[in-house]
Amino acid sequence: MIPDVDNDSIVYLNGQYKKLAEATISVLDRGFIFGDGIYEVVPAYQGKPFRMKEHLARLERSLAALEIRCPLKAADWQSLVANLLQQHGPGDAMVYLQVTRGVARRDHAFPVHALEPTVFGMVSPFTPPGVAQRTQGLSVITIPDERWLHCEIKSVSLLGNVLAKQQAVRAGVDEVIQFRNGFMSEGASSNIWAVRNGELLAPPRDNLILEGIRYGFMQELAQAAGIPFSARPISREEVDSADELMLTSATKEVLPITRCNGKPVAGGQPGPVYAALRAGYDAALRSL
Ligand code: PDD
Image 1 (cartoon, rainbow, N blue to C red):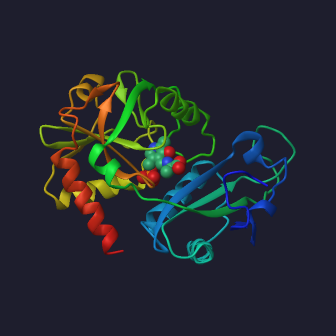
Image 2 (tube, rainbow, N blue to C red):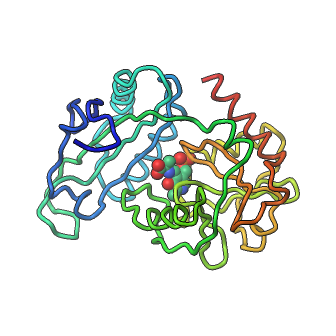
């Protein structure tokens, strides 16, 4: 039995639906041995996945980057997710999908013979951010980005992100903002946004960040709200003196960052650009 989870919840593993506590993989799975796999986290509201098409497209991009064969067609992913959500019942949920290269003798390079990728899916309950987080905002610390140079792949090799998030926990804050060579990259499990002079800024979509599904969505929301947007390197000084900071992720949606390294961000209150984007996000969820 695994503590802190619903051991009877139904998960998908390699073509079968079974109880979480009964779903097991080989110790030689390359996901276990090397972190050789990828994943997705799709939020679902009242049984409806949000931005599913975009999540599946990113899953395929991650697999292609690692030269892992995509084991299911888009329609099969969709029915897998629909089945898991149906098992979960009403209520907001988070769908987790993972694909690893499969099981083979331990050897670093890709096995020469064709492998059957390991496919795993589960759904857990998810509580969208409430009033307190939306109005008070989140606190962060800044840390050096010590991760590898392929952050654009949504890989399960997440040790750099795990260690970064643990620094946030030790500091008693919600998230970190990582910097590489003096420029902002992202959080441990979120994208970070700055606002300066009314303009929404994000780091470029390159190998130094994971392009969140909310990255493109925020661009759409900004455009609809008439907020100028620019993707460009953002310096440490620009973050320190930003008018607003915010973060996005599947589970945090969009939330304001109101404290950074123990000091208030601008006035320490969520700003007007956040309010406009949050309103757009809520409207999209309402029309889901
Ligand atoms: N993480 N950057 C990193 C490093 C992330 O881990 C995530 C999301 C994001 C935001 O991506 P999206 O908007 O697609 O959620 C950016 C998920 C939620 C996780 O690992 O649980």
